[in-house]
Image 1 (cartoon, rainbow, N blue to C red):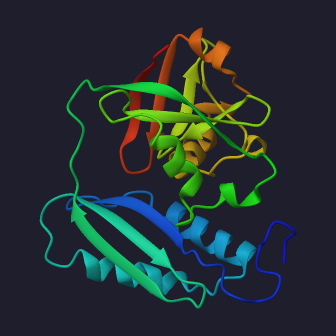
Image 2 (cartoon, rainbow, N blue to C red):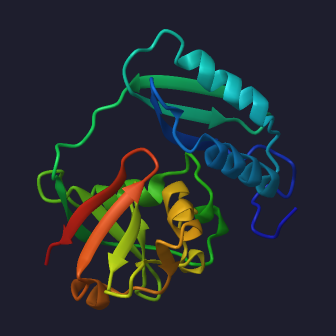
Length: 221
């Protein structure tokens, strides 16, 4: 098992793996193959039992009879048990611009679990609790070196005028986001360390995830 795994004794870790994605009546599940591939990779790295076909079937059952876009939540237990739930997806208003704040809480670049999407959310919950929703739409987290990592629920993308977005590298301590992966594969984003000072000089800032896509944003003082 990889050194990053906390499951050296074979016992359950007390958290589950999670995937959040969107389903649309005309398109089906957006980026489904990428989500299932990440789930399987995380399961392998952390010692979870995983049958991607079972996860896919659970998602299909959860949208049976749905006629409007859905926000999908898929959970994988250590023993391979799968849960899938759907709820109506509420898009952001057209032209929405998120306000961003910097958290004082820090992530550790040495924490390999940050690369996996799990229900272990306390670092992000602590950061989100630093600002009420009226003062920040999203909160950015930094690591112990003062490098930007990600938002509480989104990946960070900055336009510095180089033709592709810059997004923090995984070595900074952040989730291997599905939208992030897609944009890198398409050549629309490249990895690069970003500091708060550099971000304030960016031509444009975007936050994004597989559920909502890219969201224009601005960093508040």
